Length: 147
Image (cartoon, rainbow, N blue to C red; front, side, top):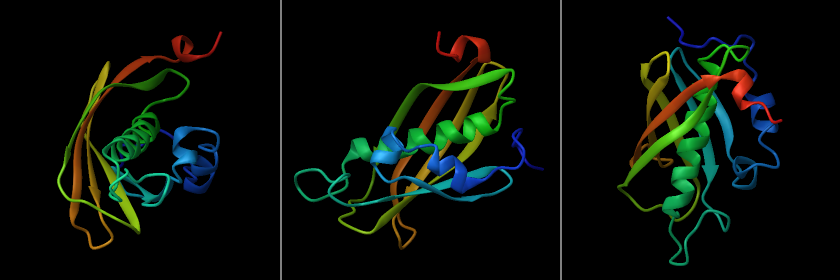
C-alpha cells in the first residue's frame, strides 16, 4: 500500500522545481519512487567534494534532507500540512571520490505531528556511504506560507 498522499507525482517536475535551491545547486535529481520509498541521486564532483577529494559530509546531509523533505511532503496533503526538517543525524561510513551517490528515503513513522525517515546513501556499487535519521515536523500549511 502506497504512503503517498500526493497524486500524479512527476519526478522530473519536482526535480525541476529544485532549481535555485540547494538541491539544484548540488545537482540532486529524483530517480525513482516506490510504494514507500523515494530515491534521488547526486553527482560527486567539484560542488560536493571536500578539499581532500572525498564526498563532503555536509553534501551527504544536504542530499538526505532534500530527499527526506520531498518524501515527507509527498506523504502529506499539501492543502492541510507541510513537513519541515526538525533534526537530522548522519553516520558517514565510506568515502566516495567520483561518480554518483544515491539516497533512498523510507518512512519509519508517519505521525500526525512528526514523521521519522531513514535515508540510506549508497555509491554506484550499492555500498553504504552514509546512514541518516531525519525527523520532520508536520505543521499547518497556512503557517508555512510566506507572508
